[in-house]
Amino acid sequence: MKSRLFVQKNFSSNSSNNNTDIQIYDDFGNQIDNKEAKNVSMTLNHELEHVGLEYCYNEGDQDIVMNSENEFEHDSSSVSDETESNNNTNDFLSEKNIDQFDFDLNNISTDYENVYPIQFLSQLMNFIRDACLNKTTTEALLALLRSTCSFGIDNIPKTTNSLWQQVGVAFTYKRFYYCSICFMELIHYQDCCSHCKIKSKPNSELFIFSIDDELKRIVQTNIDVIRWYSVPDHQINADIVNGEWYKRSNTGEPRLSLMLSTDGKPLIKSKQSKTSVWPVISFLVEIPPPLREYFNNIVLLGLWHSPVTPPCSLLLDKIVNNIKLLMATGINIYLNNKMIHFSINVQLITGDFPARSKCNRLVNHNGFYACSRCLFEGTRCSSPCGNHTLYRWTDFILTPQAQRTQEHMNLCAQQINSVNKIVFGVVGTSPLASILSIPQQSTFDYFHLVLEIHFRLFASESCLQIFDKIAHGSVILGEQISFWWCVFRQIRSKETHYSHHLLIDEKLIEDNFFDFNNLEKYRQEFDLVYNQTFGEFPNLSLKYYSRYQCGLIVYHSVSYSRRQNSNSYTVCVKDEKVEFETEHD
Picture 1 (cartoon, rainbow, N blue to C red):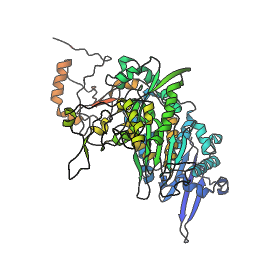
Picture 2 (picture 1 turned 90 degrees about the vertical axis):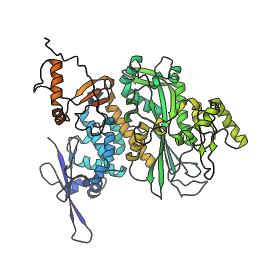
Picture 3 (picture 1 turned 180 degrees about the vertical axis):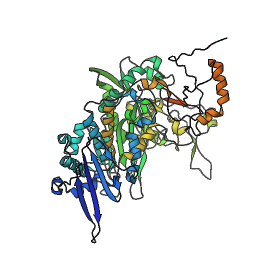
Picture 4 (picture 1 turned 90 degrees about the horizontal axis):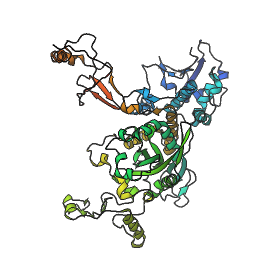
């Protein structure tokens, strides 16, 4: 039986100032004394203003129903715009839409010990996020729940800190603040730079995450998939694990190989305050695609939020130092009651041209010697333009170009200080040079170089869209993104564990999307082929399927009613569990 608290908020306008009458009723319709309800950290009226009453409407009165069974009920016929605006974020968090793939959720195991408290706190946490509550209003909500709930009151946290402690969320990132003009490091975000003494731009934020915690979280979630994919017979032939560079660094012991990526995205586009976010993320080679690019499996190494693009050294120095430490010592991860040691190495870094040139410390793509692989100088286009650098294929094949090496790039970086100019396109020393070979391991991005239409198909691009939606407001967005990333990633990692059966299970999908009109269109041909195959005509017990799933790939036929203009397939499925008896003359 549900125990509920009904909060009704009525408005009256008998005077110039609108008066608000708040009445609280229990599950049996008895009114609760308003004085008792006010024994919280803030007045009840002020608390209810921030709890999110606008989410539920009923005949002009605003109602909210808080259930003891882990749910917030509302009239489905009336949903606020604010709730709809958060649907994109909920798609990212919802288990129903996990990673936008249609697969059997039985292959994702979930720990349901102490299921009630965890579910309640999880629902509470999602409500706090969707309602855009800050720390003050969140504690007001917790105080309101503790003052009115008659069930398990000791399980309801008193403060936001105790809420995160109960759900096991730790905020292990480090904060750094810089002046957006001279990049001098500051102590607090609101500080004014003592060197510039100008506050024309908001200060810059840099957040560095614990690589140890991120790797442990992902490996513990995917250990079954990692072990299965380590078998050569299970590996994809065209995947990185069969590449020359990956095999060269194979020592035979368990290892984790990082694929780094970075890119920028504008967050606030107003003329007064234009800011962007630059995340540095990583994927693990040992997790097979496409699982390695699921949001749950993204390693967030660092995050830069600022009105200006980050210098390479500020963006990467601290991250590279953390990676170098792990490469020297490795990492110990507790798995199945056993401590396992993993070695760490960096496989590659990728990104679009502006991001790669920044990280590689090379000139941009419109300058001379812009290629990261060879020393092709390029030529300026002829007048009247003369503003573009051209790299003609005819010039490239007529004169073989020397290949770049990491040693040559390091030598050019050393000469810059003496000659005071760019040398062979090198503008400085990249922090990445200490953990990988830029000419060989800074890979081109097929997504930006080949595809004509810029879809958000790849994880790095999709991740930027999540960062755009995960924070609300316009102040200290880097802190908000980092905060909620820790909350959702850690919660989901404790609930979800991927199984290798996701990649190998095959099944016919039984649904209501079979187009029987299409079947009638080809009824004569179908009955004829069926009779030739099985020696009889189909009867009413025959089942029809329009979709077939093989691992994470779903095929559909022309009889799939929701296919629209997409391609359809003819798939032959061998079902060894079904035996057909045919008679021959």
